[in-house]
Length: 91
Image 1 (cartoon, helix red, strand yellow):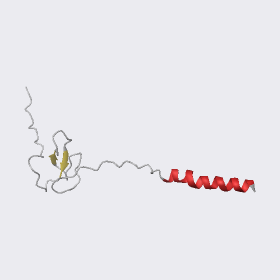
Image 2 (image 1 turned 180 degrees about the horizontal axis):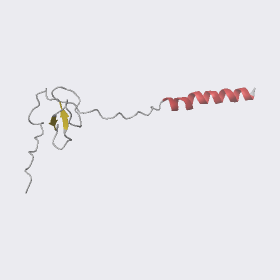
Image 3 (image 1 turned 120 degrees about the horizontal axis):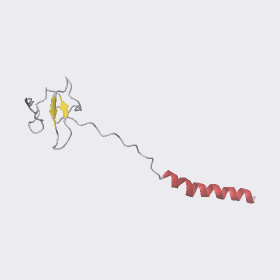
Image 4 (image 1 turned 30 degrees about the horizontal axis):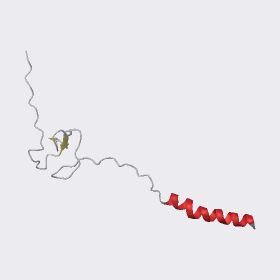
């Protein structure tokens, strides 16, 4: 009889104290990779490399990386990157 009362008490303690302590814990969340920057005009993802499909160089904020977008969208002049003229070779 004493063993049965002890087991019932242990089961009750387990139910009242241990299980709620673990049930309240949040599961660890995984960090998502940052979303690729998008074009402010056409909302397509910008490319990091210049390609035939993405020939227009843009810089969304001063100091940001230069990204490339399609030539079809009308970019504001404030985000376009001016191409540097090729310097003449010195002789």
